[in-house]
Image 1 (cartoon, rainbow, N blue to C red):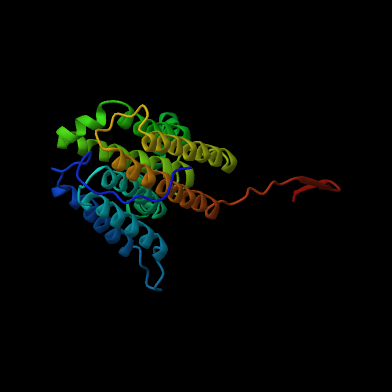
Image 2 (cartoon, rainbow, N blue to C red):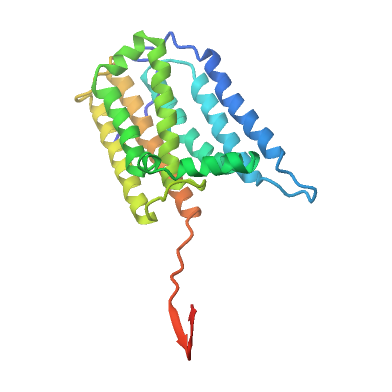
Length: 269
């Protein structure tokens, strides 16, 4: 287990020249489009799109904005950015059910086309929880165990691309595990919980490597590595617990029907 919570300081190992700039417009535009579509669902009886969905999506957009605007100040700040952009914000965005809202907002012809697209076999493979796990956890190991992180310090564009990867892969993983939107057939809940457990173990193992400074290629002093590893370890656990709770909250047990013969008639019970 990682030691006590460390508070990161200094500027080594962080993106000192990083400025979010136009990237901050992304969460603002996302929420504006979502809110406009949600308001159009309001009916004459006062009903409409669930407020909890709007609140969840707004929370996700807000966390994304926080992650993008977080001042660069060492590896611990980078770890907070990844936690917000790649784990917490995607869960809020997914719980907002944006695909369902889109289907309600467009005409039937386009809606059918979107549903057909979601049912394609290739998309089913892409939307599988194992694929999301490989992209999120694999991306983290690639970033910290290869020269990629060092390269992002020198190339801001590459830094933005890494953020985009973690945002999209985080959304994909959260959607495949706990999403309520229509999509390809998801594995049963026990299988998704197993994949989530593997994700917890993968994040914990990488955090331990960072904390010990073993096999990682991060140009930061030991105290910065320990601070960032602590954020990844405990913050990642909290994010994955929230994802598990979201999965269980949206789970609807399947009711098995059996046929019972009553004279010449067969009925389902």
